[in-house]
Length: 224
Image 1: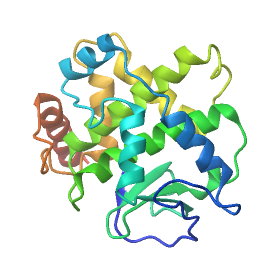
Image 2 (image 1 turned 180 degrees about the vertical axis):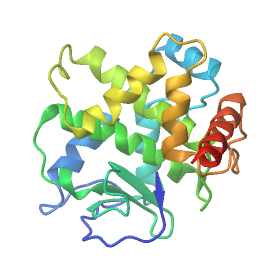
Image 3 (image 1 turned 120 degrees about the horizontal axis):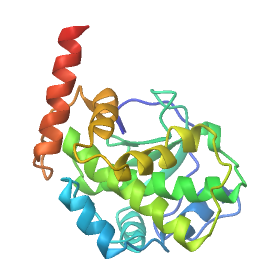
């Protein structure tokens, strides 16, 4: 998710990620877990088959992008209270919902690494545009990161049903991988969250999935 205006108290990470004593340990740990994420080739094939094109090939690539491009990471109050994180183009910063500040829960640390992965995908474009296709591409990063963590840490997410999971990484994994050839539930969810966007933006040409999401959004708007 993107935002343009936001009020926050920054917890700045240096561009080389050499953390200071007052840097936030939650972000530090999440970035360390981000570096470890690798994609299963079959998952990549599957994502592309439904029209999602992940902006990075693995977590280390995203980590290096953050480090080399002076992307800041902060906790703060987001414009959308139910958002887990967002990319603020004007400030070149990844904003993480302040509700997760100082979290020491390992499952939450893993989930936040996937959220940072998503926002790094938006940051990579280096523009102020967004689209349904771009969100789909970045959601694929969330899901692939979550799947990696599940495989690397058996049963780590069992019993995790807080908002970060029930309305975040766990939910999207279920929607992406639910046996449903039409992906109707996933399309409806993406429509509800991002249907107000245009299907295409620079670097993210809309596929059939994004076009169908926009159509669903238009139908729902007309109905309401």
